[in-house]
Length: 70
Image (tube, rainbow, N blue to C red; front, side):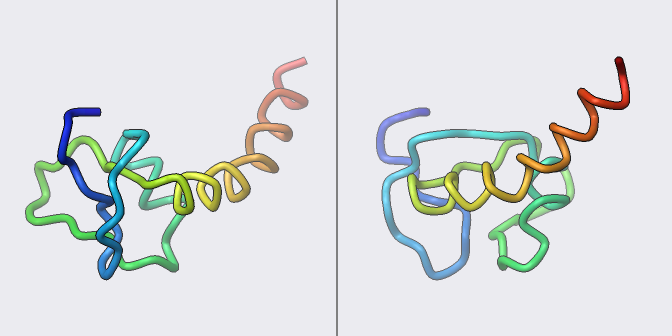
C-alpha cells in the first residue's frame, strides 16, 4: 500500500494497511459505504479495523469453497 493512502470506507480517515479487489470488497462488505469514485476502480484500501471485518465476512465463504472443491 502506498504511503498516505487512507481507508476506502466512507467516514474512516485511518491509514490503509491492505488493498483488496473492489469486487471482493463489494461482495463481502456490502453493508459498509465504500468510497468508489467511478466504476473503473479496481482496488479498495482498508485500515486494520475494516480489514478484520472483511476477513470475518469472507472466512465462512472460503471454508465452503475449499470444502466444495474436495
